[in-house]
Image (cartoon, rainbow, N blue to C red; front, top):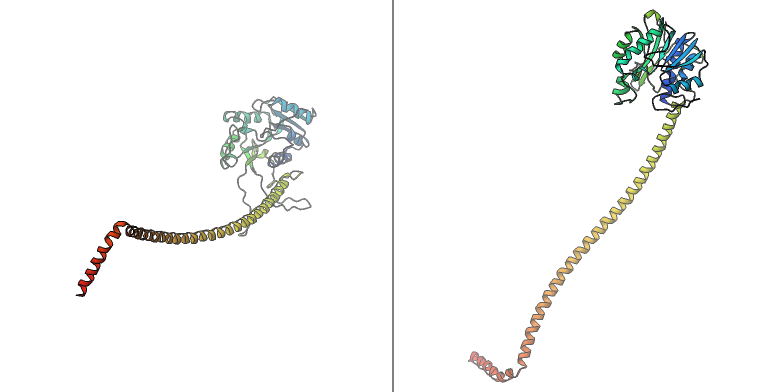
Length: 355
């Protein structure tokens, strides 16, 4: 068996999650239209869908342009009679006219250039029996790309609804449209079989019938005439995988949210402790700053006192110096020679004041 590598675009059965829901659901939806009929799975890819359809169809042929993919599909699913795989292009199908009752082509048309899309649908019309139907899907360009700002490198020409409808009408004017989108739902189902379906939209403001929004993908059942269309298609079709992978993924995400919430609370508590320590440090710092300010004021007062003391010392030093000069002078020989005359002048001055 040839192994195939997942490229991010061509779906493989081992893939899980949203991409698995989208691809498996489309084939599960198509099964109701192929029972006991000749089916072509155009651009069949890995072959899992052809095999699923072949379980109820008279015959199922898968066509794909990639030789390695066809070899893989033939080895894994082909039985040579009921389920077969053929290498070929959807624009030039290596198959006879009017040889199929149902053509299924999921996520194919957007991989062709705009000029190649009408020839592909013309080939579908050629190999389809007059009362046959086509079940075809395509990304809704407005939701798939525009709203998400997304560009799929594998898509050459995506379509808006009106463009897709006009393109289909060239060969298949009778159309019954469905939308597909992966979403979260609460499901209530009967243990016994039932036919009715309902959907609700609600919140604290009230409950009302669900008005479906546009899907990410269009799934269209188309034919040459309204009479060829199936008498009915399901109003709502739901799908989940056997492993409940999306539910488990949501549960894992929920547990991760709870874990992160606990970490956030622990982080908040640690931040609060750190903030408390910072507040204590700030208080100590403020006290230290106040202490430094008080010491600065004390040092300023002491500096002023020292300056005043130094001034007084300088004054006293000057006085002592002057007195030392006087004492030194009076101890000199010249002073002793002048002393009698000094005393005489002082006595005469005193006498003159008293007479």
